[in-house]
Image 1 (cartoon, helix red, strand yellow):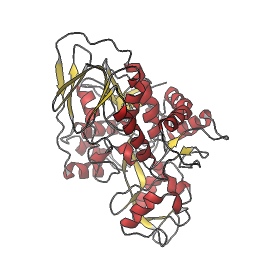
Image 2 (image 1 turned 60 degrees about the vertical axis):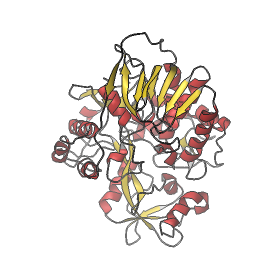
Image 3 (image 1 turned 180 degrees about the vertical axis):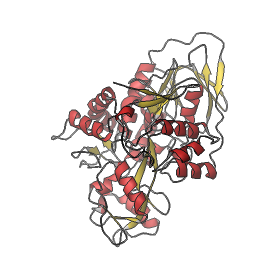
Image 4 (image 1 turned 30 degrees about the vertical axis):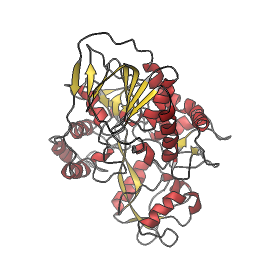
Length: 458
């Protein structure tokens, strides 16, 4: 019996495990290798008000502005107030950050902390994985897929993997989002929302599944993410005639739709000090492009799923003993459109809060256990093409109705949520309802067996 079972080994899961392990016995269960998460691939940085011209309140204003009226104010305050401490703690753990702060879309000043140029996620994940593996109170099991959650009465006292039950006083899902359900994605193939589906089947509420962020600048030939930091340092988006067609530092939803509507879009990296991004430039060259010579072709791709399992600000879901943090959770902090580089920060802030809150759970009672299992149909090319066509950058009611018949529970929930939000707001754009409607200034919540409802979160 463990004190805490962490399901998932991205930044949220590993940081949660380390946050709890000084006081408790923790197990981390990862369905893949420890360094195969979406966090590991994150090229952006960690947003934090650490500059002399910045404050958490200003960081909060930018977050609220990008969220288009849906960001939960209390969650934004927690995120931005705790950000400097989380960055300092990463440095104490051994993450070496770059000297200069970066600028990214939606930010009013330079506040992005990077490591290794465009390899921030990789640098942070490496350090957290090393610390977790060497910690005497953390057990790590890699290559082991969770197939269900244990239920004892109303509580969740652990999970079930392919090799058997993992019992714990509390269970923390840190399983990431579901952006790999789309045909074009920046995410690893396994990022298909297993944890969200498990929690929903176990009785947890989900919210805001219609809010999916598409990254504007992905290499058109293979889906390589070209970090927002490039545009922050001067990269330009141009058409085939070399003419700029959008504000490169506008919120991502605006830039992504502009790129998608263009047909042919190119990212000109020649104004950038390319030596600041050695790893990324090397990847571009290996794909056959010369960023010194000419602009390179880009296209949008599904990148980040804003919605997920409904939690409070300490990661509690509506199932006692079950917690969630990171991209699989929905605290409301991002609103309708996530501010650049707030995602790794979310993993750190709410991963830690969830882990510490979970330590207050009572010891599991000796009661009969049941297993809530979730068999997700395989994610086929047909499903991914359907998601891209019917729930991509631009949606409409007819396409979403077709998606409701998909053989995947998350695809159906996305369709239900997107149909219910009868407006366009942030990352959710409906061609048949292109205006923002004040009546939908809330969160679309779905509970098992219930119709969607709109909730206000303070």
